[in-house]
Image 1 (cartoon, rainbow, N blue to C red):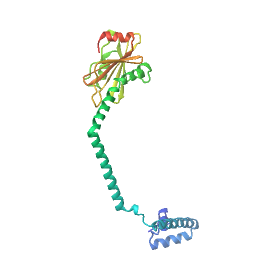
Image 2: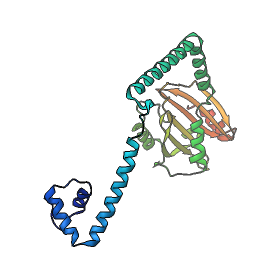
Image 3: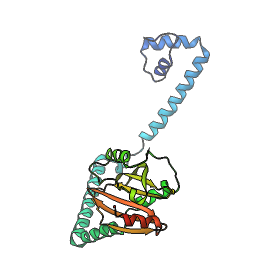
Image 4: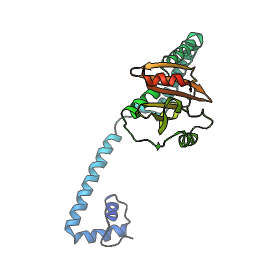
Length: 250
């Protein structure tokens, strides 16, 4: 049973012929005394008639055989079989000779990546440019070691470089492709800076042999121990780097 004045829902039900006979007569009586609302309902009725006529014409069109459900399922099965056959041929080709090629490619990529590039980038970003503030600022190794132990369990101890005139002053946590990393910044009384960098070897466990390399104005001395990769970064060919080499603390 509808109520008066009618709601918009009642009006649409009238246009769609969904009202009972008694409700329809009641609504028509109401519309006869409300010409503005009656005109709106009449416009809705015309729109509905046009829509039904358009849909009726589409339904009277001949059936498209390409849309037959049975034919569609058959085409999908044939396509699936072709895809499986292609995949099988690809696996066979890899088994015959391609697999060794992919392994060689992966090994080449791993060896081509220069070691501890991220340590050098971190030094340039934070030690030289000072882009972001440190996560921790201290003077000395004690508090810094406790901070590192929170994130890197059973890692090698922070290098003690007091003999070379350096002490830890700040640390920052970083994110790398291998996992979380950290850079500890050292300074001497003259303001010279070096950094200690630590990160995990990554999911493929790429541990590093002890080595050293130069990259522009910087030098990275790197090694692996206790399940982590490490690097000391310093100005290349400088007296600072020589002082570090003489201490032999890393």
